[in-house]
Image (cartoon, rainbow, N blue to C red; front, top):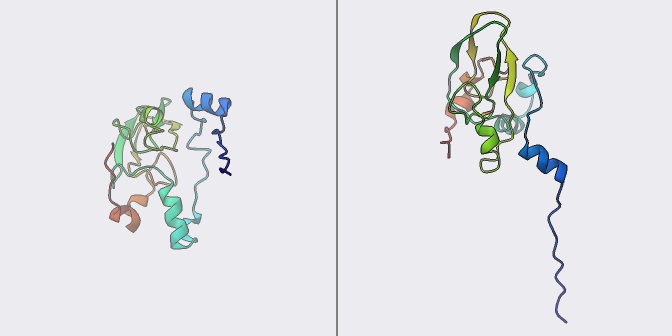
Length: 147
Ligand code: FES
């Protein structure tokens, strides 16, 4: 007797599909993000996993940006924007092909200022540089070329 093959249809979630197609990132301000300082306490493997879940390393240094007080900015968290350190929408258009899971971070400059913004995308205080790019894992990482 021939084995009966059961075809499984992929599950289809319309709400999820629409959310992804009409993607509006959850508003996540830099001020409301909780910095994760637990990385030091975890084992190397766990720390590396957490590190890989952040965006692609665009550059192994930060960039100084002149910010206008009161203006809203959108910092690229995925590392694929061609308008670094700001988002250009690449995370939206290439999210399926590049498997991008990060969302940009809205922030507002409190005053006219020059700020050091993260380009390695591994900071724990997005969008600002916290010196994470000096860590060994970041400095030794191979920068993946954008596809
Ligand atoms: Fe990187 Fe939008 S392009 S977060």
